Length: 111
Image 1: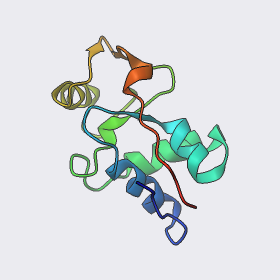
Image 2: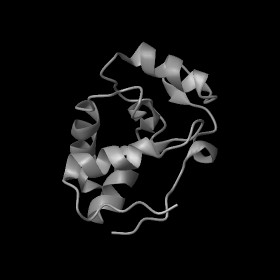
Image 3: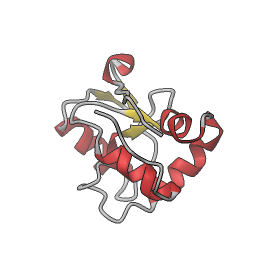
């Protein structure tokens, strides 16, 4: 599935991508940044856009994690993020995603 993002602002583009991450799969802040800007350097901006998500369960920003497999932050608290990821079928130990590489999801983007 391709994501059409060319007519959206940065935050809308980030949330449109996040909304399409399937249950049990993850994306990193850096991968979303790379898809939107061509560089992982905007990973922090992606994090800020995700943090401002007005619908944190409907738009599943809990499925966005750090590139080292750490779950990262969450507007409703890290414990809630871990609980939601576990309910999605993602295995977590401490704050780390187990089988991290196998859990990653990539889109076929149209810019």
